[in-house]
Each structure stands twice: as C-alpha cells, then as structure tokens.
Length: 187
Image (cartoon, rainbow, N blue to C red; front, top):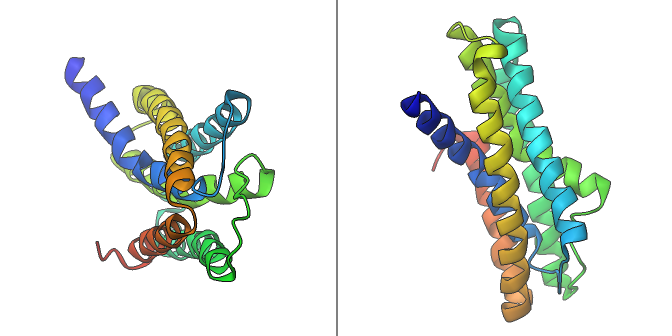
C-alpha cells in the first residue's frame, strides 16, 4: 500500500511539473495575487489534469493510436501561443498581466499541461487498469497539481516583481522550450 501511494505521488509530480512551469512563467507579469484568485486557478488546473487522466483511463485503447499522434502537436500549439504571447509583450515593452483568472487563459494553460495526463491514462488502461483502480493516482494528481500551481503563481509573481520584463523573456522562452519538448521529445 505504501509503495502504491509513493508511485501515485511520483506520477503526480512528473505530470504536474509543466503545470508548475506554466503557472510560474505566466505569473511573472503579475504584481500581486490574492488567495481569491490563486485558489480557483489552481483548482481549475487540478480539475483539468485529473479529468484528462481519468478520460484517458476510460477511453483506453479505443483512441490510443490517434491520441498519441495528435497530443504532441496540440500541446505544442497551445504552449506556442502562451509563450509567444509573453515574448511579444516583452518585446513590445508591455507588462500586460497574464491574467490566469481569465477563463480562456486558464483553459489554454490547463489543457496544454494536461495532455500528458490523458496519454498516461490511456497507457494505464492498456495495462489493464480501470477508473476505479486508478483512484489513488487520480487523487494524487489532483492534490499535487493544485499545490504546485499555487506555488507556481506565488513564485512567478515574486520573480516578476523583482525582475520585471527580463522575467517575461525567460518565461516565454521556457514555455516555448516546454512546447518543443512536447512536440519533439528532445529534452
């Protein structure tokens, strides 16, 4: 039981690393955040990540071949949009807020970082796992994603306050590199 819990937490940490990066990078232009804004965004990321994981388990081998081909391209395009927007703003000299409480940006960020959870769910289903037998992983994914997005938003906002526009450059580049990794599996 303890080994299963450790495996579920490690899986959740691996899946939410990009959630942390996107939330931190997207928050560098924020001058301040309050819990009223942070908690719903973190909850949305956790919900999307967990829902796509369970959707992958549920759909299983029904879509596995098609999903694996399209997931990389979709994830890349979403991260290209977010990272490219940040770089555009940095080059224009704008410190426009990347408003993570906005529905569109939360959805884009949540989906871009959760496609890998869908793929993991599909691979678990192909290994014979069911939605019920995947509950420990799902709970771990939800909790760990929620906490890492909270930390990402707080940390990204603090870095942005300290470093300003250079943080936008770095954040945009990091998101583009994550997108390239999703597309090509280079890193």
